[in-house]
Length: 261
Length: 357
Image (cartoon, rainbow over all chains, first blue to last red; front, side, top):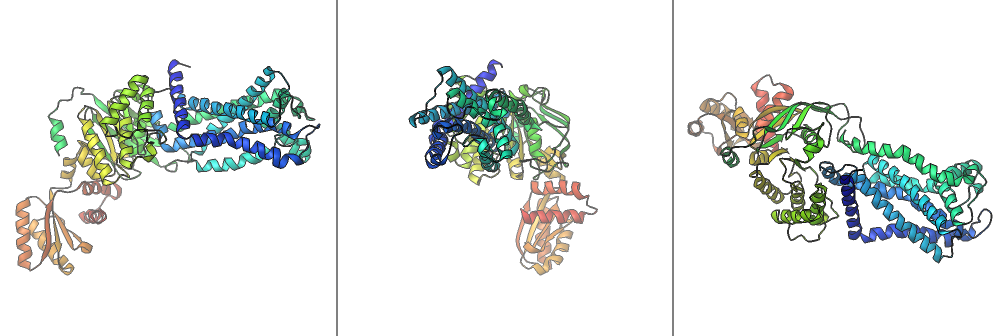
């Protein structure tokens, strides 16, 4: 990475921060939405839920909600990319003598920043709800690292899908699809409680791996499971995002370069 | 045209052409989301174009002629399939960065960040030109002032009027004074006031020695701004001349007569044909109008009035005029598209065009 790439990426990040300053409501809504989900599932539905191996559902839910929020970040990234593509401003960037990677790097930095804030806020709300982490600070930081690692993989899927879709209207389809995919995991309920074949898919969902690994690191209930996938959640929480990145990072970069085809 | 007169008096220091395009070909790939046209049909089919430094060159053509494709290739936004394109002495495929250092682009759609203010936009683009923070800020102030946007403050560009947005877009193309400025349909979608604003801004630039390549569907725009016009149709250049030369191609001046009584149209046409000695006379029954090319303006006018009077045909209006670029354009592309076998076909095409203008 050259000095020019760094400087230009910073300029692009500043652009995003300026958007935040101009549209604080959007930022707040983006941060509050996962909190609202957490509260809804904890207090509206949580009473009827049982945790595999026993324990308070709220303590099971907080790490799951963190993993889900990281995965749902995909649509925010995708929306931002399609909006840029359609405003024509991307043509200006591409005709400037700037590092062409800076547009995507700036997007990444900004989205990761937003997600880090979101993680902090959710942990804060979780603490207020009575959830605690029982491991050391090192384990907690590792858990946050795994969450952001998942978000980073989702970021590049979002960039790729945004470039592929090209239009903001198509983001709606993704916004609907992320729900079944998000729920087909152990975020809200144990895969063992689902029909067998659905449960095994849910157990292998990348979100399940991250959620289980994070539960384990935080010492929350549900940190272990019956399946192989649950037993090796830590490994999968590292490998799944890596595998997704291996596929989607080159696809996204290729697609961005391919804008000139 | 005053623009030509002014520019011909000036010697252009750099005699190398600013833009060289040879046999440029581009066919868009498989259809994909956001693609403007289906795959298969070439957008450019061997376009040739040479633009001398310091001139304003218009690329004129209908929708789908390949104008935007050409500009996007020259501005390094799009890769061509065949042929050669050089801007400011650099091949656009091999040295895109060198080209980007030397160009400004005003695309069809405002290429600015609508959520930011004008100043924030210009500062950002200045930083991306690597001016550094302080110089980028100073340049932003200068440009805002120059384009009459100095009092826009922190207002988001999304709340600008169309003309203001276009001027900001133009300012963003001029952060570093470009050697070549591309204007892709700069006034499409603007109201007449916005159009005048943009024209004035473009004229003020031309004096600086910047080479301007302008695409337009508006013949008036080419007439107003350009030294030379390249007429493009189906991805090829069908003519490349000064506006005056183009107009000369269709013949000299024209006389238009509007009759009071449409019933006399046929009789009047033959009278006028004899009076003007024109090879072809066009009639437009809907408007009760007869048109003919003339060589000697005053003699033709006198003869026509006298002949009509003698035949007892009453005219509502008689006018001498230069041919419009619309007529030139249809003359060129109409011929190109369906090789007319007689003058009659061509005349008919012209008449149709006149009614649609």
